[in-house]
Image 1: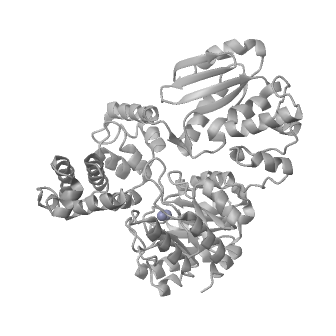
Image 2: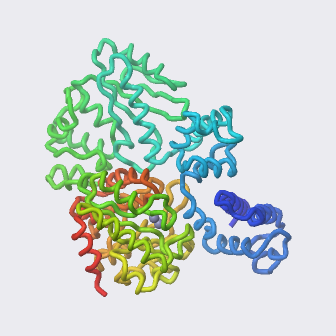
Image 3: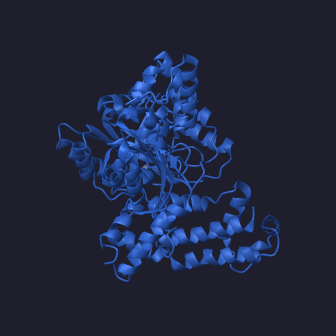
Length: 564
Ligand SMILES: [Zn+2]
Ligand SMILES: [Zn+2]
């Protein structure tokens, strides 16, 4: 383990603690330790064993633990746990140049902002400038900083890219002579990480194509452009790169198909076209279906176009009928003001009812949660509140759930008598991410032996672009889940998207039941569900295999069916 990596971990711990409002002395201790570790002349492992590192000024017990942890496992549990307790959007804000931790805390506390798009909106509409010690100049710099993040990182998260695609798409649609605009590429295929945006633009009149190309280049926010004729690349001030394919209505289908990809999917289609002597280019396919039909294939939903057997299935007529958001009857995995959420039980029930759900499963954190959980003695009070909300409605029911911590030894963080009081239990790992694969797998398999466990939450612990999954033999976990009737979650928090869609497909093939969990900490987080459904679809999942596509009774009987 090299010193810069340890220093970086210690510095990050200091910043996260500061973001959480920890004691300034504790924050400074980590900052000092980071410097001391860098200045240590010898090898860190040697220094740890000989006790020499412990004698260095500025290096305390907590620092030694971080060093030992990183030497043994390559990661710092203290950092992993802090990451768990801080909204991912705030962590993203820390990468905005010039925006220190103090200001981020101020933004979060005063405006309740937890994500970059919310921050950008507040910078644009004057709320940010109105904060003490901010002003219009700072707000402007924040907007520039958010834009520069787009430039500096190669990949961005799906939900950021999809929001950007929607807004770029709207500007393109407003151009004179454009009759239709569609998003294509990896956003349409719902990849979890996106590099560039792709669009197909239909012109009204082929003769006007060059004029439209010129207008494309002057779309608001475009700073650079290249290409000509049918394909133009636009570079926006926000850092976004968009490939725009111009086409006529008569050839729209083939153009959209090609612009959507993937390369592997298209290669399978091209070779099928050759085998069957079906010409593609220049044949006028107004809709994608027309291309598939010409090739003797059923329509392949964009999420499946990864060259992973979908063309063969389309030929055999065995493509799955993918789950849709409207199939979901229940809303699962959300936190209320009993743990680290902001929404009350009644507000949750109201929002879910209005969104068209017939039931919801409330799941605050258990008592071991770093983020602050529901203590066993508070469970009766929460349940009385849920009962009261349920009495007030005949058409909607709130189920009593919890997101229990899976402790290091595989036990859940309530006594069995307390667990008995819940309708269902999600079990998740929020601590000790650095265990070996064998230890971590045992930990999770042990938890699955507990008949209280209904759903395994975010099964690999990854945070996209910021934390690797923990080491675990997922295949053994999935096999046991299928065997023991434990559902596995697709956590729809856009920073997690865990289970990964590739493993969702594996879970499906093994016969595992999957739940789509919003992991929402406020009503705004309900939008996560759509992203989670995208992951489920990308994993070939049908509604029959999705736990919250069942009605409340069906869900309850699944939860109760765990063998003791
Ligand atoms: Zn969790
Ligand atoms: Zn959660």
